[in-house]
Image (cartoon, rainbow, N blue to C red; front, side, top):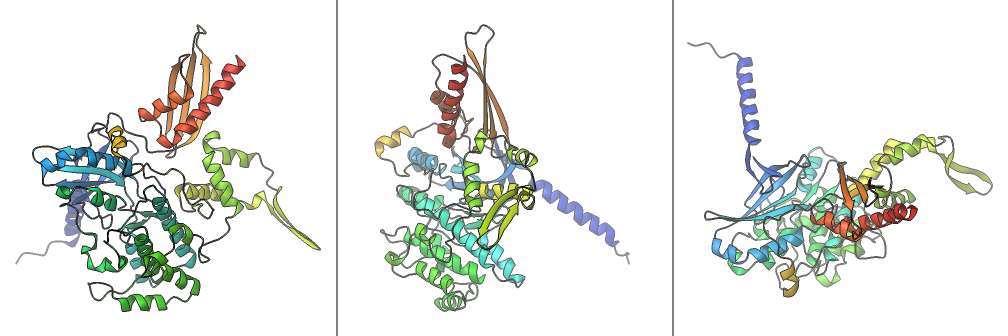
Length: 500
């Protein structure tokens, strides 16, 4: 009888097998036409993405971060070819949907050959998983939901919905569940699957076969309002779905009947279990059966359960970030070095009593950097103001025929558009040796801390607006930064040329 194999040896073999599996998953299966995105073997689950047959982990070789490679396949290649321009126009404009609480669609391309027809699009990868997964883990550890975290999450979700609903025409998500909401390790909420409703509605009838019904999963049926699917359903469908998400976040889980759908009785029990009357009234207003009685996303931000007067610190942080491109990268650190740490930062006068004082020594610079980073990432949106329309709205998602003609571009595009915003700009002008022209040196610091230095010999006919537009065209600058850079260059030209 053979002696049993030693345990350590079997353990080493299992470890070797795991390493081999890991190496297989990191294999590169395919590259994008531009070579920037590399598809890996490992498949990822980024929530319920209706219509997408495959989602793979991929690498962005330019920024060095992981992304998601999504594939939408079509069996009828001829029908796909007939509608390529329409599909391309839709994705062109979906790329413009840019909000810190929405999963970003970075890039797309159409791939049609004899064997297949598909749309491949690259989206942001949220590594911490879906909100539903997080809530399950929290309940498993017997922890209750923190009221402050619940308010912060609701504010971020409503910030994204307010942005989408303020577009012209409004963008309706139509598939908002705890499976399509993702959470990052720092508490940042991001909504995914935004593209699906637009794409499935605008797609011609002969191409709709790959799009599955959103409601095929029974356990998510309770997220959809009674009027869902009707011709006239509007943004109120998202408010109902948000109300269900807010209820699930508050109670951690709404018990389903086995593995099937969540019953009305389970929802009623969850509502009645809420101890905070303001929270209960807030959620019930979202779940009104009549869509006309549901408040808008923007109005919900003013509800007493969420609304709070923004602190001066938060207002100052947003102002700082909007104008950070005018300041050195380490301005906070340098400013702290020159301060008298015993000086009074703020004081509250109280008649008949000593004033309350705060000194610079009581403010941690490291905590301030962390706070600025959180504000920049969208964890503390600035939404409680009278303006209902957020800045940076995308173009109309259903342009008139004459405008649609202008949107046509070849696939793949000749240049990759820049997706990162500029946080700092520096510019220098020097006369050439023959004094005949100016030599421009431009330093751009992007939000991922990438430094981009550009040089150019100015011609007498060059304008700041033309230079900024050219940098956007060639993929060196984000479209949203064009006006900002043009104004910065204009002031630099006046300064140097005026001095001469």
